[in-house]
Length: 97
Image (cartoon, rainbow, N blue to C red):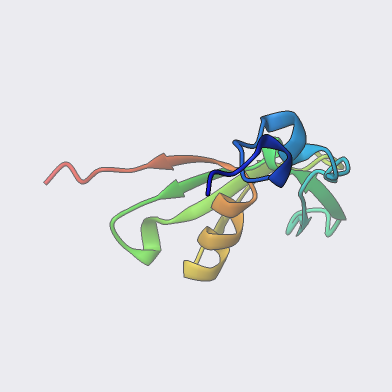
């Protein structure tokens, strides 16, 4: 038996695959500034993640939108997972040894 085009077994187009999807809300991350103690939400584009050879050299950074301070905080495995999954730009640091 051959399948007819009406059976739905044909190839799916991109338009068909995404027809039922709605607009996805952008990912935002909650953060705080240690200098001014401000609390805010940041888009993935406002954060940078640096992954080093150890936990001491793995961190994320951003500029506080309230006071303009450059903020750098350590990033454990879970934070790295959340930031990379949320589209934060990542820089991999290499050892010079």
